Image 1 (cartoon, rainbow, N blue to C red):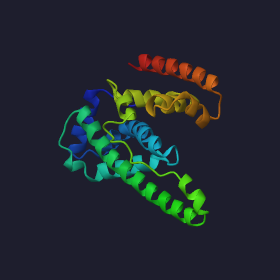
Image 2: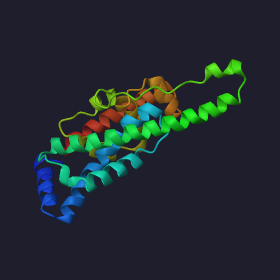
Image 3: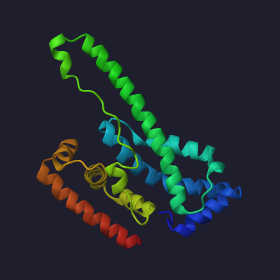
Length: 205
């Protein structure tokens, strides 16, 4: 697991700015897991799991690599904030593209439906502002990279239930539906997942 301390990130930033290729690669890889968590929390909340967040993460890292010289900060907090702004922009673009495609499909379907049935087609609302969304608030932590690294150590079911319940803020009924389990089973899974996450973070602190 990468060292996620402020000092380590500052060292990697300095190394990357000095032309150290390995340091630059390490800097970006240290943040990949965190961006994946943020991307899933943002985008899947808007369009309900119909997108692979890794595509947005990869696009974000490519753009950050390309525009690295534009980053003027020096701390871990500034670095993560800069990456998250790029990711939020890419996520919003992706959602707009998805909504446009979905609406065109809806219009085609509506033209083929009897007029009495057309009012039942649901529209797509605008995504919430990234800075104000519950998922963005929930992801805040003293060491965000440590949180993402701890999430990566969880079993797939534990990571999924925390993602859906804590980061996407879905009610337990929806979490149960998404995970194809009963609500009591999901609630028990969630309690075990939270306990496991806390133990991992204590161990790695």
